Length: 357
Image (cartoon, helix red, strand yellow):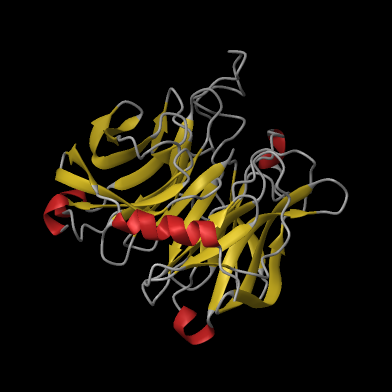
């Protein structure tokens, strides 16, 4: 068994660290470090035994146990770790107890200096992945290090949604035969079909209580979006957008066009959204149904209330603390607490009501 010593020590130190207090609209919360010493962490997922998995963009996957140990997982597929590429999301499916299988999304190298977004499944046996099998690779590879998307979420029927960005190319997001700028619906036997199109770079994906898919995606200069992708629909990029290019020039044909879907919310200026969860209300009943989205650019967690109006569509509360530096992922844990990843801190944090600590 190979142990990642510096992370294990950091985990023990994190669990012994005092929680920081922060005021919010639902009362005071505490923010507690759960794992530190990470290098560009990307995703966190919970195991049935109370442990959790964390991916790091350079290709590392680590298993954290309830006993304060951390183990580097062997057998992770090679990744194209250029630009924004690398190891992305980790998914623990609902049937993990029967199959011991997890899913990983990553930028897969093409052997020619490029890569593309892919998904693999493997059995997690102790500190090793076995029976690794490739479920999907996008059909256009590129040397570009931009806009891989990379979020995976399990659908209500056991299928898997994968988000893919436009790889910095723009118009291929409108090509019905290209995987660029699409949400893909996968089955774990290797089936794949385009679900929706016209996406720039979705790096947040989640289901609501009714099993509907929601995504959050990066715009250019302005125009970050929250969408509810539906099968066969087109979400506009780059034909319509609420953003503009980085040289302040307009993009596409404006903010609306018949046949193209409008976002449910947009941000201007951009917050660079990454990570997305719709809260159950378990520990904070007032937040039931609210969307929590990480901000990479402004380093906060956005609590979005779809029942209240605000700029861009919905009302926003900014949950901001020293621990929220470049929030990459946001999750609801089985106990109802909210966990998030800070790239700046190289850490995973747990947020809970102060009264429960």
